[in-house]
Length: 304
Ligand code: GRG
Image (cartoon, protein in one colour):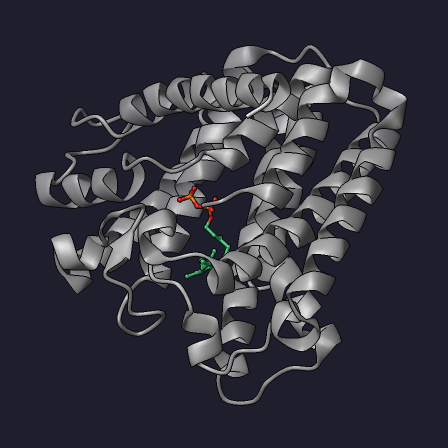
């Protein structure tokens, strides 16, 4: 590992620890605000699905995008944590027998295996709701205009026209394989929408002007495509112990991916192209965007 990637990995771990401290507080046993009680088994399932060693790449993007604009640190952490709660809910539901039926996630038993299916469904529901609670709560350091923009953006990214809709298309794709445009659309909704939001949310927290916000959104879109392509590559080139989850599932299900359509060599070249296009978008930010540039490279070359 060279010095740049060593420093980057250290920064990623540092930010993950910062975000985990926030997540730990959000998932404490004490009721928050007007909540009555937090049922212990449900809370334990939520904690199992969240405090289990993810890379925390989405909150990392929020924090680092916000840093370009010298944004309020606490507000960026809260926004990143809200997004990670949505991501974790999606993984819990994705692993359910009715969806991907996985027993391993982040190297540990999935929530429905460690608890039960009904609890896993409720844990996902409660994390989804908690995310919006975190963005809307009075004491998170943001004015109402930015709160509304963050809530609106997250709802759009996570809902029917974003991640959940992408998951719906993914279920359809098992019955009838989409063409290339269909695969790209599905992926940009299922995986890309949250990554795009991560970058845009950082700009919102940082009070960026519209042109800058749009640039970060497009950067997020590019790295979203790269993220999914890297994931598809890992599905064919790595094993379960490396990934902490089952691999080879897409091919086994005959699910269309760009790697399946064009091959590994094409995918590696395309990844380089996407990283290049993403970095061009960051040019106006100069060296303030160096960490985001490194994130684009990390996403394309990640090994788990
Ligand atoms: C159930 C509504 C609903 C949506 C599920 C995100 C998703 C949609 C399913 C996950 C399936 C999957 C493996 C998608 C590929 C890309 C992806 C989201 C990988 C996991 O994200 P990482 O690598 O995971 O950031 P960690 O564990 O590091 O957080």
